[in-house]
Length: 499
Image (cartoon, rainbow, N blue to C red; front, top):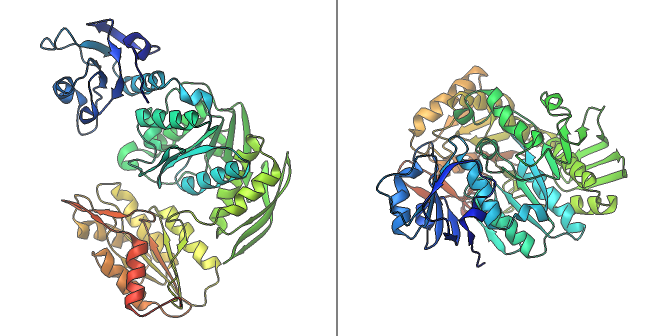
């Protein structure tokens, strides 16, 4: 993609204080990481939680940047050959988002964007919407926790919602391939940090709101306020359609913000209500009456929580005016979401499930879903809590897992720079509160081995927290670690075989 534009074109619409230096600069790329600067780049020196981008201005210039955008005033030692764009303080990330959209030719304007936000269920809901769009013959891109996919290819996810610069490039890839839709998980971090600024959403979906990320947002109200931004509009007007889980206590505070609102529920009194509900180990079946007609749902996805996710996707599908038959086909076609209630089968006489659940509410939903399968034996749950994240949720996770499991094997998740034993001790408080039966083992592979060694015919073993992740973040390094592959290897060592 060979793009070039004038500095004036690149910063059109940005709230600036002043621009000094060459007015005829030709911008060949935009960067917010000095390591990615090349000759002709415009470098955005953004303030950060840990690092200030202004520290890297000289590095960017040395690498060939011809324009710098910063909320700091122009330093006296910057060459007069460098254009300096002084940004309004507090609007640096909005400026990056707008400049990125300018540079790639406003690709989001050529797409129908569907944003899904909420604490739990975002990934599965986006996969369902993507499957519905594929059934309808649309070409789409999918951006979220498990990875980023455009018609140009797939790449690993660095964040649930990428930086605005990367996001606009992905939108351009979808547009340039003749795509029509972009589906993305809209994280609270991304909304608070204006990564979606300037994007208009055809559909905004709210799944639920439970405790998470309070290490960043500080208060639950701030966390909700970040989610609310998707429905109030991210600098390009309110969404055309909002799809809201009416069973969540925060639903009322989101209704009426979008041009049109569709609600969904398992309890009644909503636009989409699941009736004739059947839950089993083979999936879910139910019926929904909508303004577009009756939708019959048959899905291999398991559990009540996935009924909510499917209802959210149905709301998005009907909001996009997709034919009922294609909605039904798309839902039925989705058999697996990586690391979301994913079964591992090596011929063992018990169920083994890997799931991304890493909050108390998600653990509660996961274990309750396992209970709905009517297993004849026990539920053994392996989980840990992430390091350098909200400590206050740790005992709540222990309480949730301990109250619903027959045995908990408490271990490490991504301890990062924290002492794994300290994290475990925080969780043990909740386990002891409900008098849970538990064992502790900081080494996650050993913990999985303990759980699989304890399992008997008819039991269900749940490996919670990491889901699709293929790594573990330790104090001084990141190692390869995939719950699914570790579990398979242990089962094979124990002599199990599907043959």
